[in-house]
Image 1: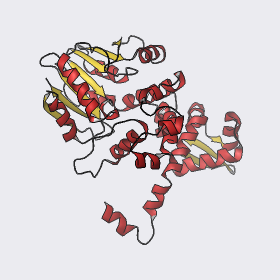
Image 2: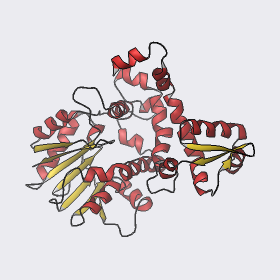
Image 3: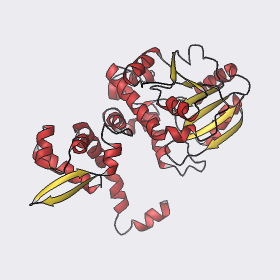
Image 4: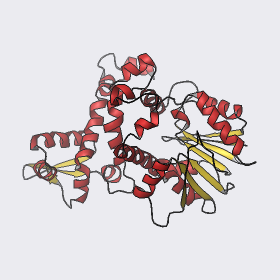
Length: 348
């Protein structure tokens, strides 16, 4: 890849320029989401002019026209000329993933990326130099208390929970079906947040009992803002680091291990092993690196995000396997889904 890129870029650095402008492309999408562009176009029964969109969303016509044109350029919107006036409409992709009303909407994920992750990445140079997260420099809060920063207000908690909810609406089915988990009758999703992944688990394995175990304030917010009618998922409050862990056949740790350094991860996994029923297991869900360090690029980017925001990192399968075996788990199986997140299953 590097050799191919360097050879093809010698005459003119097209790819490098695309990378340089990547942050601008992100901000075009972020801004359109925050302004409500995709929601308005989804509601409309016909294409709209920039003037109409600007009037509805209370923006300048000039600024909105430029934003809409950029969205056309990156193939998220469509445009046509009618009586000399450009009118804009949403693509199927925008309607499915970028408008709030869609069942697969990533709107909450985008808001969190724009308002929380983006400011942190402004301090990536300092994170690389110091090897520490940038919560203090970005938000003025202690870098040691990662989740106190993430949950620093009800608004911020809702943003983060919306991010997690979007993630599992998108990837949850592939994760829960990566292995046949029907033999596990009692499943506990540790740090299960809104319950989105647990709901996918309950759909795939209706004979199993699925419980979300999370901090009291998280459970309260989940039940207030993310509950569903006829919810098959149970909720239980607690702290899996400082308190007791409920008995179960299968424990799910989805995007938990990557938050912390190895020592803390091993302590948690040993605690889970000690309460896990014989024949039970643990399911880790993470974005796994390749062993040869050549990707996937998404996992490499996620690992940098752990540097700027938390205390952990993304890891290759061998490192997860070592931690699991070190704490007593055996028969480690790895499944790469080919999407954002992968699964590792180990049994007691």
